[in-house]
Amino acid sequence: MTPVRPNVLAMKGYAPGEQLNDPDIVKLNTNENPYPPSPRVFEAVQAALTSNTLRKYPEPLGDTFRRAAGRVLGVDPDCVLIGNGSDDILTILTRAFVPEGGLIASPTPSYVLYKSLAEIQGARFQAVPFAPNWALPIADWPKNAHLSFVPNPNSPTGTVVPLAAITDLAAQLAPAPLVLDEAYADYAPENGLSRAATLPNLIVTRTLSKSYSLAGIRFGFAVARPEIVRELVKVKDSYNCDVLSLAAATAALEDQDYFRSVRAKIIATRERMVPALTQLGFDVTPSHANFLWCRRTDRPAKPIYEELKRRKILVRYMNYDGYDGLRITVGSDAEIDTLLVELKAIL
Image: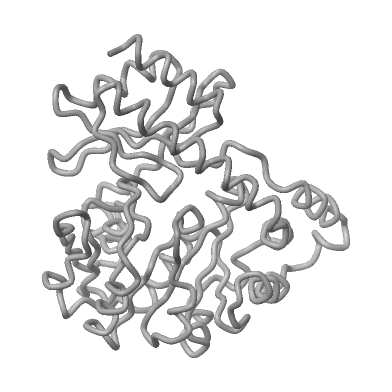
């Protein structure tokens, strides 16, 4: 008999997007940024590759990055918690707030990792269906949730809920924490960073994987009231971010001119994809992220995904209890041109 905990044995586990080791693949399935990081990132990493730096432990709280976040994002550095990607932050939050047998809630369809985190913790999970027009289902939200996750923009749809609705849900749940998962917020018209300073139970999480081209570095952070951050520090690994990721993240965040130029290119490509995919028969949900949620009413979506894969184009097929579709990352213009040519041949 295996000694693994029964709840872990019973869970299916989170399945990341495919990562195929093939340079000819057009990879549009994991919402990676198609452009390289800021040149300052390479300079910062190179500078950190010294024997005197690598032989020492990194800053446990990432104070250099936290000060940079304070300057660039206008937040109190004491409100910033660093993580090995935003998924690390989500794990820390689950460990800190959710007892065994507790309850985690999130909307659906949404990020499926939330359910996995509940299962690992031995907690219950409740998925709350979005209201019409992707509105936040505040009236149906379980009031006894120990921790609630709301991705904004949402994945896989790319839709956003207004900050007023986030504020209302936070008030309804207080003092239990509400996590505003803003992995894609840099592509949206507004974000909740300022609310985290005023709402005592709101925690905003961010990643540098999507808009700063650092998916391979693994760096994320949370913004919350200082008294919350002080408690979360007790839960995180002592040195959860290494010297290279801290150097890269700080350099990327500080180069806002480069960040804005890349973001503008991705948004422009996203906007031209919508009519092109619509003409091919897809029902495309308006997106405020770096991907599009594309569904069909005339045929199943999975065979399209499979044929694209055969043609060396990866998109993400997602199925939520019969609600299925293709989540397509906004790639470079050349990658999207290739996608559209192959879709025309398939359809």
